[in-house]
Amino acid sequence: MIAQVNTDIKNPKIKRPAHQGDAGYDLIADTDAKIVGTPKGKSKSVFEEVFYIEYDTGVKIAPDDSMYSYIFPRSSISKYNLALANSVGVIDTGYRDSIKLRFKYIAQPSDYILEEGKLYLKINKEKIYSKGEKIGQLIWVTHHHPHIEFNSNLPISDRMIGGFGSTGI
Image 1 (cartoon, rainbow, N blue to C red):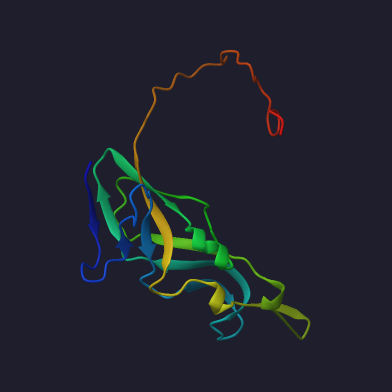
Image 2 (cartoon, rainbow, N blue to C red):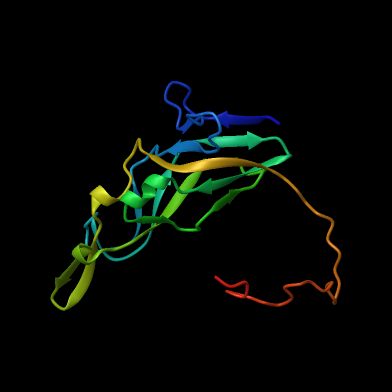
């Protein structure tokens, strides 16, 4: 398996796993946070609503056809008011543009401003990633496509149709 990575060679925005056995390749923000929402007037940090916060890594990948990638949040995300917007990102084999990560901002009570009966959100810049920080992990995965048989009756199993919590605690 071979994957080509296009990034600034002198200042790469992707880092190989640090230790033997580590799976994730760290992705680094190549841009400041792009806050997408409805700003209050010309403000760049106070908003009527925030849809997402986006970072570009400047990293482009070209894996061979046997691979694709997942994007996961890093464990450091617990120090920030952010959650990866799509929980886990999937980068298909044929995607060739720069890898971007979008986050939802998790507002805290201290982030709200009440003015003239209207509630606004002030983004706490200390609680979001900055340019140059590690913002996500890229995991390489091998394609596995099973043969699918369409059928109106599935074989019986011990579990059957038990759903949430059906196996006990």
